[in-house]
Length: 461
Ligand code: TRP
Image (cartoon, rainbow, N blue to C red; front, side):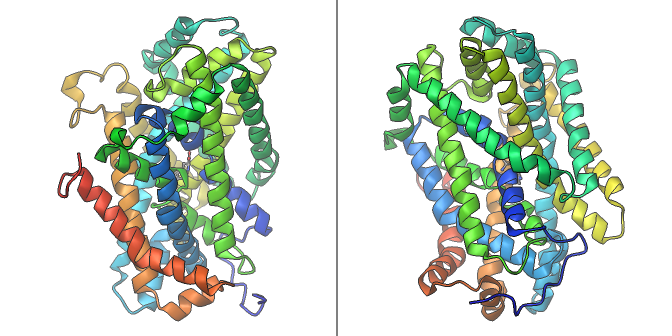
């Protein structure tokens, strides 16, 4: 069926130039530090196979339906999440207080941006180390020493964090369509090519199958309630869901484009990217006798080690961290966009809005930096976690899933079904029903069960 009978009412921020630009921007948002840095390291910490399986199940049963819901809400309202939720609530005859959900997401974005920028800053530092050839022919202890040295040095971390935040403000201030598009168009494919180069290298280590077994052999005895919560939280983080980033991008999407096909494309590309990153990294970990459960340093220790011992490693290593940086960059702008779009709709100019969110979350990020050095002591811990760990846990594992439940309920129960169907125009009745059941029942119940299970309200370890 043709969608052209629907009017193309643009948002005040404009519309993506083509449907591919929307896909590229959303995939640019989804693929980031979550795929290359976080997924491998949490898979390592939580023991491999069973964790990966739960993550995949969450992407399929919870993530994809909620992504459809976010895009649908954004595109129907053609406004930033705070306004979108309020506007559609009014249209559906319920309280405008649903706008608070937009606020919660925007706040979660502010918190996430603060530590996301710190980690992206590490990638900036590693571009420099790689270029200098620091890791050429280095062994495990040299590489670990370099990473621990960075964590012990708040000034270097602050400089890198500041630079990354400035880069983010710069792009967001220019508007998402301008400038970014060209970069993403060739950078994302380049990132994939590099990943395959690394994957090829992993295959030559003689430990490739050990990596495969680690990631895909399912041992449920390793699965704690915490592991399930982290797997679910990560499915939100990696798909950029639960805080309105994809909703904000959906507001600029053409009505000619199918919401379902777009969500599926984004979900498949993001998941494939994460799995390939894991398959590239774990064989290298095992081949060098390193620990898969190394934690946040996994990518910053194993990859430099690999590149340092690879022909043309200085070149490929430098390019790799540049690309990690770009993947993080295209994600960071999407984390800031809901706030900026809201402020612009309120009449503020983009540069001011981008600066406000950038500078405030830059400031908050200083505490994440200090949680690796000056404030790493027990007296600064919150529920046994450093400031950075606590913030990461609160946002990824609590706020994003909570936002997800409410978004699902909004699209599934609050919005009028006729409006929803008109926006989706799904070709297949079966797919539509599956989505509807997922968004009304499966996703909300599953998320609530996992949250309650973690807090020990219902059974499980
Ligand atoms: N998905 C990105 C990553 O995997 C990070 C990200 C972008 C994000 N936008 C988001 C995370 C919104 C949570 C919410 O690196």
